[in-house]
Amino acid sequence: MLLLNNELLSTATLPLPNRGLAFGDGFFETLIFTDGCLRLAADHHARMRQAATALYFTLPKPLASPEALETTLAGLAQANQLPAARLRLQLWRAGGGRYTPPTGAAEWLATAEVFVPDETPIDKADFALESHSIPSPLSFCKGPQAWLYVRAAHERQQRGLDEIILCDAAGHVAEAGAAAIFWLKNGVLFTPALETGCVAGVRRAQVLRAARAAGVECREGLFKHTELLAAEAVFTANVASVRAVLTVGQASFAPPMLAFLPMPPCKESPITDA
Image (cartoon, rainbow, N blue to C red; front, side):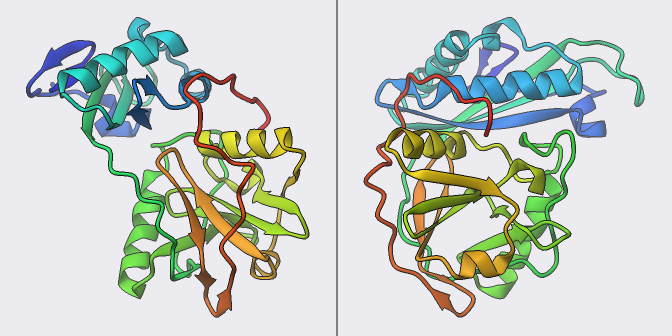
């Protein structure tokens, strides 16, 4: 079962014109429903609201608040009889037209599949050679630059890596292929700034929030790859999992000690600076 503009259907056909298909005029979210709630709903909604503002359209009523978002997607998970679900929510501007938007209304599609957690360590990672992150007014959200992550995933596959790390054009570390990247050194937690073009991940926000609450010093900034390679421990984090990185190129790392990082709660206020 899926939801198309809040209608529960077994299958759907999307009519043309479709501005998401024609122009990439939209964005998506990947969300996790488990233990009876939508994980980090407030953070997801904050990013959705920011993305809709950047694209000059309005969130539909069933998605217009964190509570509405959770109610809507919980219904989809339950309709699919999935106590643990990985959800994809795609939004695009309604109507046709060319580059000039004809409307501020949005259409949307939500799908669900079984969520299987995977927090196994990443044995083999390295820096991308063929692609780099590209800062833009929309690089904080998911979708408008998805081609970049497709290219990175292809390179990862061709090189036989378990994970790939993107830098920006100036050589600053940005993010992993589908997750934020962090490293620890001398008790300090480091992660790339959003200025690198990395996605403003909801788990990135939660990791920083939890670390600061535990009194861990956090530094967001522009860091060259040599600074990551000099770390004591490295890990990636996205809404689905946190995974230790054991090697990057020829550098090896100890598994990170993450006592400050519990499983993300369902109800938590989003932060606005990460």
